[in-house]
Length: 241
Image (tube, rainbow, N blue to C red; front, side, top):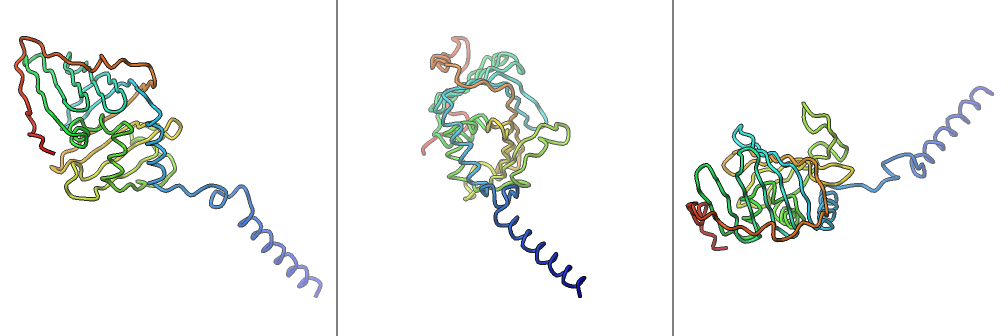
């Protein structure tokens, strides 16, 4: 009888202790921490970029198995410049209304007038890594964690830890079928953007060595075509939006 009472007492004590830990324990993440949704996380990242006036970064663009490398400059709200090192001396400048691409080896300048949403799509991931770009993404895409809110390796070859969000379009008219954002969990800055276009092409933007709030002047985004270059206007589409 004593043993039965002893076991019963220990069982009740165990149940009480378990209930206390479940409902009041400070070490259990399910109750101690706020539940983070993908939409909340994307909002937090967007707010982080809203506090960035400008930034510089090294950028690598991969498309169709080809890599392009350059130095990126961004000025809020949507001024963008990429000075490419490979292909050498090629320049892309977007002032929020007009995108110019100078291709020295062809003595050619491609000039395109765009609206903000098309500007984000046309400049690819570089345009998305901004407060305005993220705001447009939140309007046009539904976010979800790729595997969960915990950081994972950037890829099989790079153990760098990132939080991955998968964005799917709300409407079929969006420029990408799917976008994967890889975000540094400490800085809340975008490390990589991977997109699958409506034509099923894959494009990837990698951002490294990001430096924020440097005081970049707006003059950096003024572009004058070289006098010997052939200029082709609206080479992608005629924007009537």
